[in-house]
Image (cartoon, rainbow, N blue to C red; front, side, top):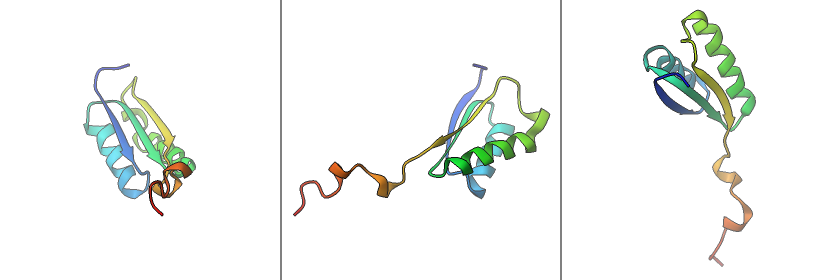
Length: 84
């Protein structure tokens, strides 16, 4: 991995995309992960960042998309545990 910082951006909407762009351009980034409940949106944001930054994307930077679980998708055993 290249020298630099690792970042996790939660959400790949307009603000997440803007934050990721700034981190990639100015944040001495070695690794950036975009996490979103919609994996397709996160992947589209990664493609958009690659298009926007093109050759300005520092060599060796790892850029990836990851799915996240939404709060209402908690496991059933935790829902209502201890309440009746």
